[in-house]
Length: 138
Image 1 (cartoon, one colour):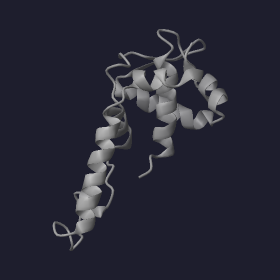
Image 2 (tube, helix red, strand yellow):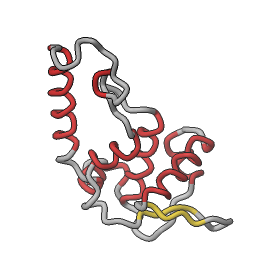
Image 3 (cartoon, one colour):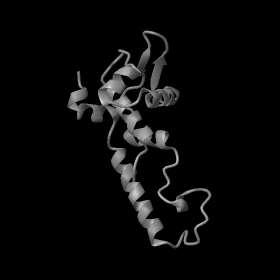
Image 4 (tube, rainbow, N blue to C red):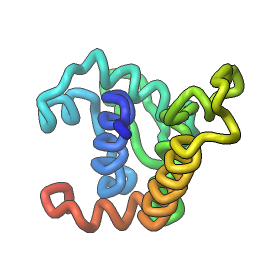
């Protein structure tokens, strides 16, 4: 299993926002801190703004801020929103054409792994992850 770069960057932004309170965070600050492209971060910021978790403020003094309690935002929710279809194999998609579906040991093993993955993620909130990331704490 592997998260997309987009989700990785989104999680980094959310972690930074978790400790900012009402202070705005700019794309330039995130790009400089992590050494990543501002162009990628613009897409990330747009998506996070549509999520309802982040407010984006345009203009010269603009930026973004978290508008939900980071204690209420679980890692599994974030990843599900950002990744959308996180199907591990064709057999988990609506367009499944595999002849082994329903009678395959691999399908059962992957379903079990996916469930364990999601269960582990659900145990962490954005706030708990932020607390475990010392360099991001103010």
